[in-house]
Image (cartoon, rainbow, N blue to C red; front, side, top):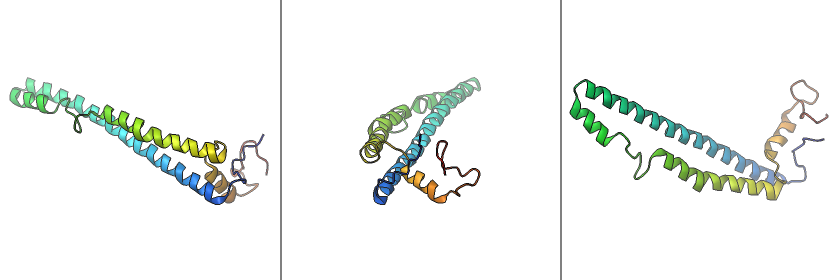
Length: 141
């Protein structure tokens, strides 16, 4: 069984285009991770804010506690939205569409094979016969 995904049947421009699309998706995946981190950190900040309100109240700073509770606790981070709504909208309207086009391009052009560009790069850059430079688990030199 061969794990060769270099797809020598594909022209270099197609492989490069697939590689750029894959790289773009990986960049969007990274941005999505930052968005989820933003979501989680904002939620943590709101919980800490609630704790500070409680402590201000116990310290006798009732007016400050009430103002913070009213104006900041549970506040929308952007107009009409909490971060979970931002994350959901991003996933449904951008990330999901991006992933669908990446899958479509791979299905239509490379039989669904992923990372063809990288597979070719590995073949170019590895030292045949050198330990830790094997072509792949089921490949022979």
